[in-house]
Image (cartoon, rainbow, N blue to C red; front, side, top):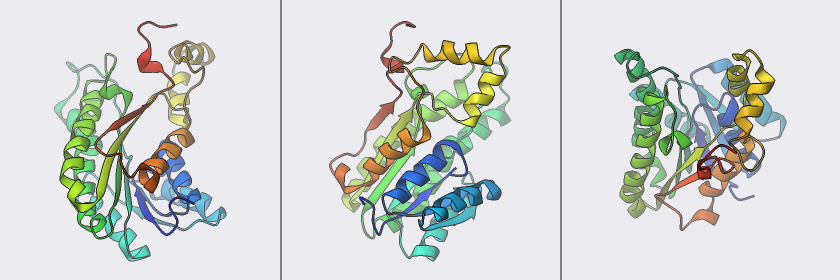
Length: 256
């Protein structure tokens, strides 16, 4: 197991991609501190990990606040005595044109997606520096190419990639690596809810699949396995980079 005796914090791990990341880290031997703003969701992920004989603890907090971000790091140290991996996965999305977007809505997206990562890193870096470690920030293909209505979300995700590069330079002397993963379309209940908003959900799903040369959407475990690699010693020479996991979507010039 690549992460045996390591301790990881995963934010937004109550469902979807975050849950998949937590599960994959646990399978590689890590003790996982599950953070989510929704306690019931976090506890559901915890039950899943515990049923697989993994070590898992929960802290419910809002990482968009200094106290909430610090709580996740402090809980990991309190529960397991150290911290080796921070995965900044928590995020929000809102589909709305920039002209119609209220300043409060802009702030809500940026405060979780970008400020939240800054706050979690600010709390975690001094602890990670004690033993060396890794930070993995979950960005999005929207950092590179986007569509109308995703202005705030795209801006936040592009900011994550830039912040990742800066953090990698700052943390390298501490033996802490920092990388970003940019998922494409990941098959989660949230994605299905999006398709269900169409008159014909099945047809909508088929149309979106056409953007994916690999012939399928991603899964939370696809992202979880990549994060586990970046968190492990197998990636010891990788820092300051963004890895896009999108089934070839951003490689397409036109829809197939």
